[in-house]
Image (cartoon, rainbow, N blue to C red; front, top):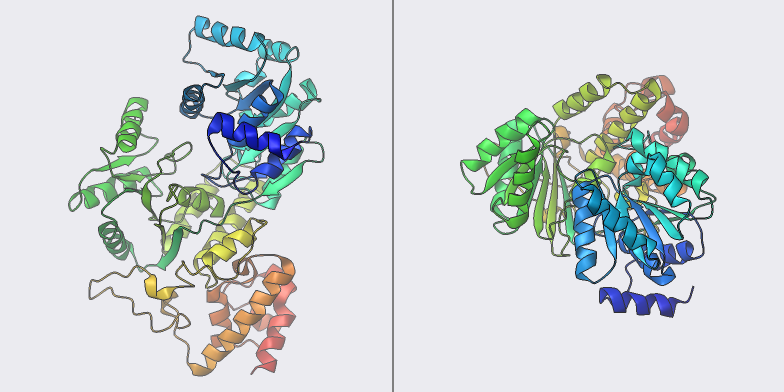
Length: 506
């Protein structure tokens, strides 16, 4: 496909002069009739990847989306640009739906949005077999995978699209997915040798900070300090439970204005009103559970705080991604205590998921804990975790790369003095001079091993594990079992290497 034509179409219909990272590669695959798996983070320009093929091919593109509000918003924006679009949803009258079908029947470019449930209706299946279609686009495609963080059964039924129209390419889009999830998406949707594009996880306007806290009082001190340092722009504070979101909102409202809370226990009307108030700026600070997020697109979110650990790195990254969509500097702060892990364990144990899915969720939770306890560049670790095409070694804007810039709390009894990044603020593990040298050696070994395995360093071993090694200095594999973070799998992979490092450098 001629790149000049793509640029001309982009400028003519969207008034843009250049493509974002990854968009051109994705578009060329689609226009060459290839199935595509694409991971573009929040704000990375996913929608353009399925909107442009409708215009270039002058044909129908069917977009599967999980949220009515999101579909309506995109259709409204497309119509403002003078582009033909419509969405089918449960709140419409029959005459509204008939009008959309008539518009499609005229032929030419059209973007038709619908839910995954509607795509399974027999009437739709019969209808879709008669249409000229450029593309099936499946947004939030991670919902297809049982290994993902937001699995939905209705999404797995979308495998029928390939049976109905094997001639039509499928674009599966998501903002975050690990290689395991991507493989499962491809199998579930029956994609044919899909081109895989993973781009844009590096957000250079976001400052990442993780703090291990002694308890809720210390967390609240960080929250108040962070809000005080961000007097302008919107703020989102994510909590683990409905009760806590209300409790934290009440606490914050004693000192700051325009505070609200949001969770799934509120009525649909109440949730809609809160979303509207947040969108218009009547609420500046929103304390919410993970029920608030998908489809939220406010450009000036200056601060995202996770008051507790979410379920996994995918959830953390997606929710941090609400910050700084206007490309201006914004802060993402994760507050972590041991109790947070217990809450997520409770959620996993009490879910109805099969054992293999629960085991996967526990592994994902352990990976997030290791990330929180890690000491390498936060952004570099994210890029490695998602296998982004771009890699860096140091970002200069996270608590590991730029410790002088970290947010500190100023209550005298809570100040955490950062003597050195090597004398851990994590759980107050103090190392003597000899142990610090050993720690440096082990960090260098871990970084090399991470490069060899193409994994983030925290997946190899956390800082906490390395420090425990320096203190306990195990002499054999049996003693290694007493070191934090070492189970049978870690010992099998790295045991002899670790013992060699400890012996040679001892």
